[in-house]
Length: 294
Ligand code: PAF
Image 1 (cartoon, protein in one colour):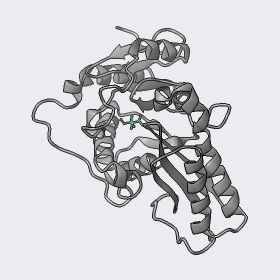
Image 2: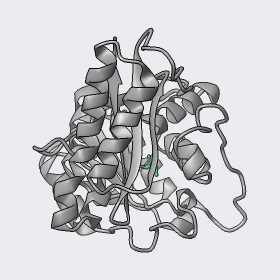
Image 3: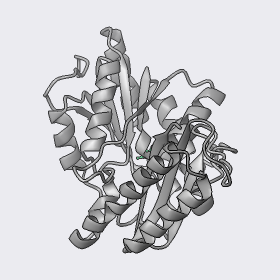
């Protein structure tokens, strides 16, 4: 390949090794281009394509990684059945004008003997950290490696995974990674359900009930914006989820937006907050979040 990959409707260049990724990035840079990076685990949906558009708004060339990261799944979780749809993903990325796809094998990312892991105490601890204790170490490790491997100008992550975005901002700052980290708003289906690769696990009947999750968060937001006390408002959200058949509900939480420390239960909000929820519906775990400003 003598020419750098370009942002166009031509199929993206697919690279699978760190060396080929760095060579492709170097060619783009040598031609005066910049790199907007979107790390993904594939099974791409319109939410991912919105991240690609956000990357393209910030850089001349979009780079998307597709890597189902074993380190962020616990042994009992859905690593084996996580959807792997690379051909369809690449076709969607071609339509979106993505220049470069990085799809490494597990052995490229975690070669034999690799033991170093990245932990981000504090912001990783509550919420997802409590219910999926292995998760953020796996995410932080792979995202650190991906950011170092790609050397992009900007990297875009969805606000749908709000706590993950805060963890990544923290690690990039703490490790002096020069890539600028950008959050992109959650993309939602017409009924309000946040787009997620795991929505594919829902039966049509469960999918219809899943809308209760964003509705519960919207009702909680309205309560808090009208000056209601946090604890009883959260209790109403939990009751609404139970009535819609969710169970168990891992958490409905009202937190400081960046540290994710829980805000007091016995008072109305005194400043901006983030509302975050994780709940199971017919064996599928869904998460969502919203911003609120009293
Ligand atoms: O949000 C995701 O899809 C993953 O957690 C990420 C950031 C690609 C790391 O594997």
